[in-house]
Length: 349
Image 1 (cartoon, one colour):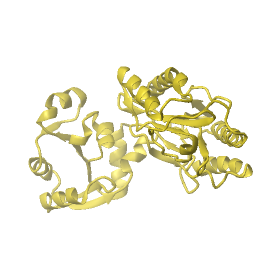
Image 2 (cartoon, helix red, strand yellow; image 1 turned 90 degrees about the horizontal axis):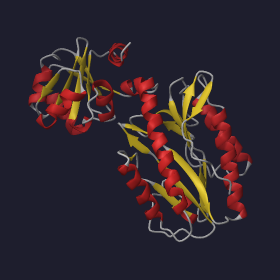
Image 3 (cartoon, helix red, strand yellow; image 1 turned 90 degrees about the vertical axis):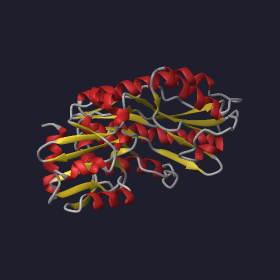
């Protein structure tokens, strides 16, 4: 069953007869069109149409097999209105702006607009083989770039210079950075999202590098924490505790496992090391067309792992004014276990 067929079944269960798709990642997964910020898809029981403007006429023809209507609003809305009279029409509540909703209400007075959440995201949870191969290629590139940059992570080098080298090498390889590169050294390691600063790495610092490649639309995500010189005994202890939690959680990955149970497994290990409260975020998340998507690997999650999901396992411990550690692998869920897609070594400190 195609994604469009699965989506139509999901729409019927949601009590709507059509869906206006505005989220760029969802536009891409349904249509193949990569200019999703300037594209929309209308899905009805009879078909699906890609809407974009004249800047993308050739690109849309090359990338998408869907019928296309090339225009800008209000012509776009007027064209769609013809097939929506009297229908309940879903829209993506987490993406459409208030102004966008007002425009649709004005353009489609004979339709009932219904907010929906996560309908297409549910279809994106499990990756097909083409998507897995795309993500494997993105992670292979990230591993290669990391190995090339690793020698410059040493005392006397600015965090910004490490991040710049990563971004430049990704660009040279035809990719881009999946997100703003995190390089957090010494006390800045206590910031889970400590993007690279002008701080100069000091002897004895632990340095956390969180990076990913975006290649052919799909993302990778990986974190390594390494030592510049010899870290303190306390930070060695923290590193080894996080490594223990990360490796235990990875080994527990397989289809049918509750995401919340994985989070608890890693959190319990860090708690035994006195670092439970220092683990300030969830264990991980899904990755795909977006860096952060379902499933959510947190204590309150109701998600259950399925074969074909691609997730991160990334426990961390953050000590204010002292430092921090995070170790993250990109993992493919299989029926009887897992495949680790990130191969950069985890160094002893």
